[in-house]
Length: 82
Image (cartoon, rainbow, N blue to C red; front, side, top):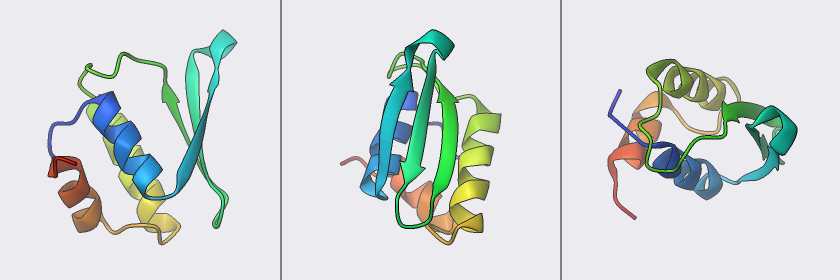
């Protein structure tokens, strides 16, 4: 899994069609993919912080499970500078 920041992960999820809302009291970012109802919950972290590997794995698994992106596409998008 490529090294990625929470900011880059946010960019990738939004590019894949996820909307996001922040639950301040829980310090959580809730990503929702409208067409599939897939949900991804991530901690509210500075955009420049490296994403924790198990968060990347959970995102990858959700994207694959819901048919949004396969693991190779997800890895490519994380590495690609937009």
